[in-house]
Image (cartoon, rainbow, N blue to C red):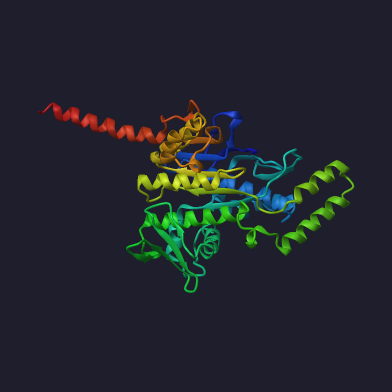
Length: 410
């Protein structure tokens, strides 16, 4: 797996940015961003989503680099789509290092640099799941609602495709319930052995997890070649035409030598989505701690295998603690010597597909001063001395202080 890098400086709430590696954040198979409100967690993942999509669009031949470099289209079109165009400052600096392209925003100008890489480009399916996803349960029968964030509109389109795909029923990762979709009336329902209700009448946590989970499941099935009959895994006529045009341009460019031409054409040879870049804001939204654990396990299973990537923002210490358990389970797995009893016991703690290699995980903490730090690891596991656990300890310290004051009057 190749790791993309991004440097952010003086953009929105982020000032100095990442404090190590010359300021370049590495996006691993699983990257987590935590911190208080307004520190820039969503800003980081929105920028990453934008740049990964842009590299894909250029590789696919949607437009030439000059198109996005001109007329401030990077800000007016791409950053505006994510709702972060107003975050641009006079001294903003952005630098994305991709496999085939570098993108640089400096001095209020955007520049694209193409380069040759020995690794083969694997086209991603980029899915951004915003925190406003609960709204999808309320507008399930509406074709369009004015004023929605554009990212939510994109999610709505994929969500409807996913509903059709799982219409026969799919078990959700919480409370042992099923989601079924009435394709005739475009209504989603939550079912158990005791009751059946419309998703729009379900709890906020159920609404939040349903849209997130079935979209993730659907894209995993499509992108990871589990179901090749779905049109999402094929090249459209428009894409094929763009690809052919791009190849003709490469062949007719006399400034390119034979090796460069061959490398550029090879990039275009496999023009289908082959990996999933899944980006989720606050997957723990409105969920009980036990449900957060199950959701995390499902995200790891569906979004971190092979070249897939999972990025999520969080305010929940439970998510980080359950992630540590999943990493530790992977470490313990490597020690077992076909001992069936120990294997069964380990499986009861964390299922095999929900374990993750700690070397493929990074946790970043964002502070109110605009600085980003990578959480230190202890024996390959992110430290429990993090912002979220510290806030829990603060409550214990305050409670102890109150007990001490009370003891003076007893």
